Length: 508
Image (cartoon, rainbow, N blue to C red; front, side, top):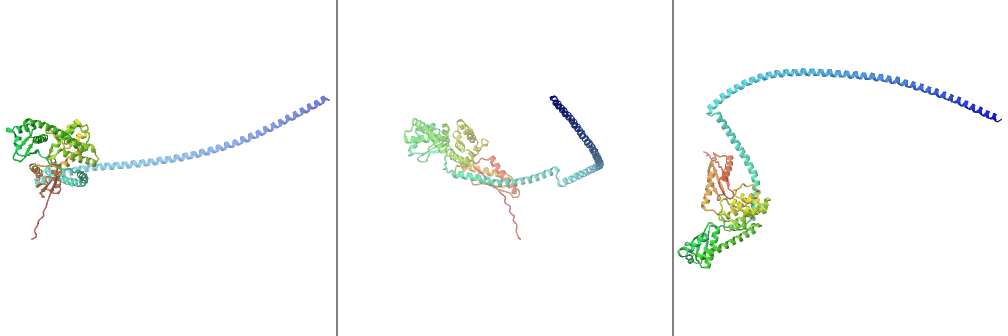
């Protein structure tokens, strides 16, 4: 029974296998048919798309061909247009070239005509020039020179007018500022006027002392003069003896020695030599003390002892009657204030001003102008080149290039030119007045010239028919320049040119 069971089971299994096989075959066939159908659909779709793409490509090709043909037609049209324009331009250029050639031929003809006319004009000009020369009795060169002189005169007048305008415009401003600075400086400096001479007077207790000073056969006075190097003048002046010498130090030594001899009463050659030696020592000490006091008053520190000694010698030195040491102190104060006003170095300005006349202490023994002598002396003991340069420049012996030199020169001029500062002899005064008037009278067109205000101003009267207004301005400037070049004077000189025209008529 079991085998039947197994047979049945085997049959059932075979049946299931057969059913499964047929089912798979059926399913596979169905899938194959479905795949074939799908492939047919895809092939049909692809065929349709291919045909559509071919159509679209053909249409695009047609469009591109049409566009290319249109572009080609436009380019051909543009080329044709450019060719037409080029040909037209060439035609215009040819026409212009022909016109230029015609004009050139016309210009050549015109140039020939102009040359002919120029030749005719030159011929006429020469004839007219010859006639003018014959009529005017003047050659063409003379006429040209006369014309040039006339033009030069007009240019000079115009230049003078412009210069005058500039002078008036700038002079007011500059003079105002300079006047303020100088006025402030001078007002702040008040010093006494010192006037000295080349002689000293020693008063005697009685006239009997004159005989004792002369001594037996004049031995005492000879010994005194030999020891001091001065001249003793014992004349009829009561109770006084005059000491004369151009060397102020010797004169001072003689004065001190003579005073001490009179007080001592023992007057003989040996005593005179002793007293003179002591007087020299006393004067040297006085010189040193005066130099130190002056440096302290001036506010100048650190000077070399030799410079202080030389400054002390200026106590006994005068210039035009003005004491040089007092003048140096005054110049120092003025220079310091001027330097402060213009913003310069006040310390250096005062130092240079204080030492500016130190050369006068030895100018009796050394040749040359005192400014250069002083500069060489200061250079030995003072290392400031600016101070040395200012000293050498203050009188024009060296070219003035530094502001310090201008300050010292200005202060020196202010001190020396102020009223009462210096004394002149009548002969020197007359010579200076005559020199000023002579300079003014040397110019053509001057009728009269007068020096007034002690030579501070020159009034010039000109001939109105020879000198006009502009020429009067030029004349004043020329006279000023000649005075500056040929004369020496303190301060400044004002030149005034007067031109007067009078018109007179009579009613009848």
